[in-house]
Picture 1 (tube, rainbow, N blue to C red):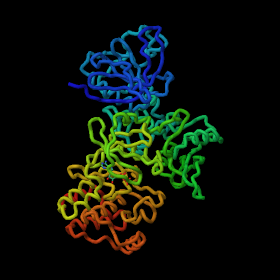
Picture 2 (picture 1 turned 90 degrees about the vertical axis):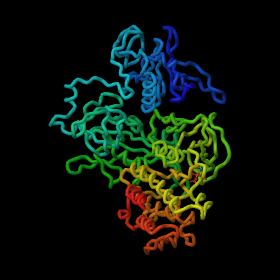
Picture 3 (picture 1 turned 180 degrees about the vertical axis):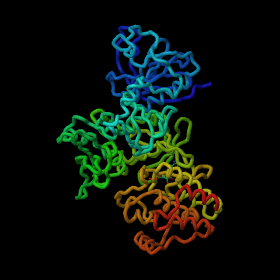
Picture 4 (picture 1 turned 90 degrees about the horizontal axis):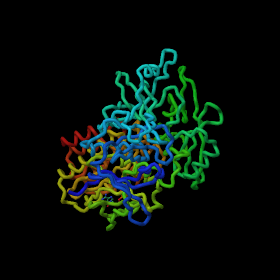
Length: 619
Ligand code: ADP
């Protein structure tokens, strides 16, 4: 039987130093893990990669992350180890997520091998083990090895006494308290779930990435340290947005060099004890011309109710600075742009940071065989292609139509989503110019064309199933607090088995409080937009519900244009007087009632997708 591919990605490999005299170097390699072996290849621009080494999985006796505070002399800072044939292979992943994926996958594959009982959690370096200081390279390990894929967090053993020291005694109350910056779903049984804005007690913060905290029910567990902030603390070193010793001038230089929309950093202000946010935008200035520039905002502090509160925009006060940053990552709320991506000395890249960090999504351009054009949209062409024996759709991005930033945003939203009624993203090919998205092929094209082409052939029952498909996908997005913002039949696709899936996430956003305000000019389509979107650009799941009502109308009208004889201005005026789209001939009364429910003036009076899905199913 052929070996099956499990993981593939570019990481850095340290030479294995088989002999004492062999050189110590770090080289970028393409790693491939399949069901038989772990191999690494050298990439050569324009040529086929060459195989540099191959380890049989049956010879691996330990795979585990390396836990070390020794400065790492290569750009990837997340090491893990593979012990095989009496050799230690050190591999450096670009981020912790990638490392965890590799270690978990390796552990899964080697679980039936003759595994070590103990291993060395730190590096072999300078002629000794940095964990136990033994000087024999093959000396037995000093820490028990867990073959469990979830046991990959190597944790410092903290004496009980030390734990309680950190809990905060009555005279330093608040010191041991942390606030969750965002929700966290446990990745393993030892993790603790987090709910944004809730308080927890810090138990141990000595690990570089995973901290132990306790919730108010007394449950303890691990959480990624960047998901929480000390209630009263100013140690931001762990956050990728903090640049300690950067002056205003250096910040401008760094941000202008990167030139990434919404690139930002937090740095120490000239005034001791204060912090400044520097942010880059290319957006047009007041004269309407593109104007790349950096703006600096000091994070303001006030004392309210005896407590310090921090803010950038007066209306949005927070208990600590990381919460301010988390909020403005999603909401510009008065800044020239929202804080889209942290830039620091270490993160300066030639490639996009997303592609770099999300190596697992990278599609090798050599594996893509492009075929015929399937269609073209406002952002560029969509082609049929073959990729790894699969027929796929490749969405190319016209450079002038969409900035790389916009493209990355669409891809970033998609990588986080997985639902059978959403068009699937297989990967991103960033090595092509322009870059492209590799998507699930939807043989029957977009829903509006499909409906028009089958006029008179579809039964109301089939139409209802189509609406159910879309509402299932939307209920999923609603549950994740993702707003689509451009739901319409033209943005849904139909599969070869006539299943409808939601697509086109170019404008989708994650919004924590289910409300998003922005000024986006003419990008949205008036005839699908809720009144509060037209008036104040207020997007929410309830404005998606309005658009869904229009989509149901399109389905039951066999792809007709809503308000086909009216201009946008006439539509806006008619809506204000309470007029709505008429019942399509093929829509049963019960279904038209649901449409009307979606078009209630007040967003709060409209149903949620979860409720609507239920009601549609019983029409
Ligand atoms: P727009 O940019 O206007 O939102 P898209 O670029 O998403 O539109 O798609 C343009 C056209 O390409 C669609 O109308 C459809 O016909 C075709 N298309 C897009 N994605 C796919 C896909 N995954 N499978 C098949 N056809 C697709």
